[in-house]
Length: 340
Image (cartoon, rainbow, N blue to C red; front, side):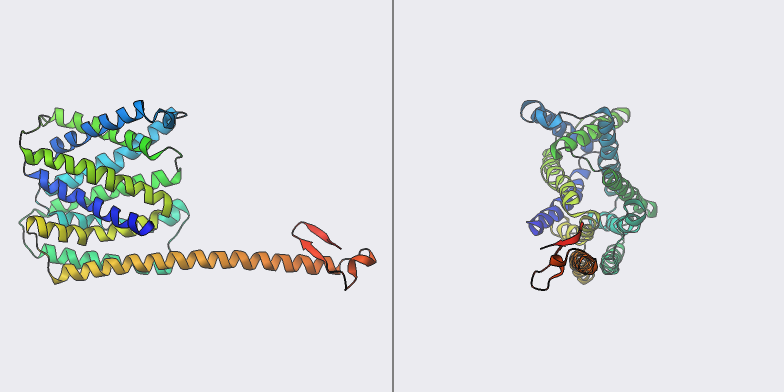
């Protein structure tokens, strides 16, 4: 099940870059984002009122505000920078590549912020992932698109916004149902993008079919698929695993962009994809080894404590019948004397 969720997450999250590319030619970034979230939040709100009202019980103002901040960082801030970068001429593959540096930032901050530092094996996997990102980035940069250099800094801001949202959520994990948090996040983004679009005169949607096709694509695949699976895997498997999967977004998006838009995809991109897959395997192996080692240490500690307790109980003075060799002494962690 975890493998299937991971595959679905990689494909769905990568679809967001492709959807942004699809809509970039027909409308401004704010227009596309506004109309992506308005129908989404209306549908989620109707579901909450008519079907899932019980999940909203007990939601206080403090948690509502915290989730609104998480949504503003993980959706509004992140998506706005991705769409702007693609609109400025950064290819979908390159945008995903820059976004692929997120795991390194998250791994570096996991120790001081969450108290869960990555192991040496996991760092090795993260290093392989970075190598894959650099290989594919070099291939895309060599294509010479004429995009201004500062446009490549825009996706970095979105990456930092998503990292901040991730750690804010992990420092105080919420017991809210995923449908509730998604509705709050989508509502926050709908308000933000509608206000920005209205202020800039970009609220009116075009009549082209390509625009509305991109909207449907983004709502179904990118939001329900990519965004929903991101938080699901984050809660089930932790920050390191979900962010390691982010290394696969760049090569997958580059391949997808090559098939749909003719973006370059050569031997360097294939090598980067291979390094990304290897990075995921190494990090997951490190997690399993750490879990097995922790279980073994806990088991050894339990056996050592039991043996020590037994030796102590056998050496303590007590009734003669409790020390007879033909009647074994049974020790418990809390009992000093044995019971015959």
